[in-house]
Image 1: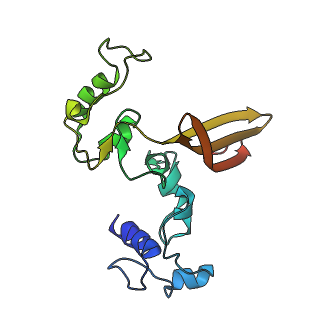
Image 2: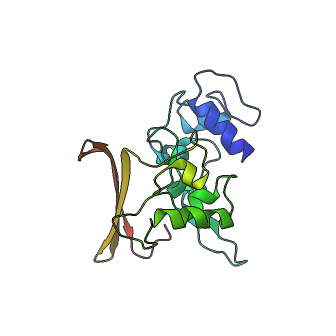
Amino acid sequence: WDTLIDCLEDWIDEDDLHGLNGAESDDPFYEEQGYPVKNGPLDSVEELLLIKHWTEDILYGKPADAEGDAIYGIADLLTVWGDGKVNLNSATTNLLLSYAEYEEWELEGVMKSRKGLDGEDGTLDDGIRSIEEVNADGSKFKLQSTFLKVTSIGNSGDTAYRIETIMQMQGSRPLIVYWNEKSEPKNSTR
């Protein structure tokens, strides 16, 4: 992880100073690839694949091999949109567990608070009302977001289609700020 983080930091920082385990444009990897480091923020999660040591297995995972070892991808836990805070009302359990603040037993309180006073999902009273209600750190978590990710997966014949879009709410209207379509054979591992 140290190498991945240092290479990411070297990709996005504005200088040409190498992190301890990082790589700048003069690294043989980038010279062989034929492009320099960006020295700017990521435009998409997929851009991580341009960075030294970042692979599809890391981003999207890999099914179990002969030894039963599987890699669980992290792409669904990442975004380049927003203010860096995680929405407690919509974050997945796996995303919340990636924070040191939360252990599985503590998430029960977050999930219970999401259900509102009636304790049932999908009713009008759903949602955490205040950060203090679940003892969350306001510098890392929030309760509403102006960005929304929508993923649609479907099949047509022998091809599977996946459409991901990021929408930014402007009042009550969504504005599409990112759109990505992929198609692959149904039996693909990704």
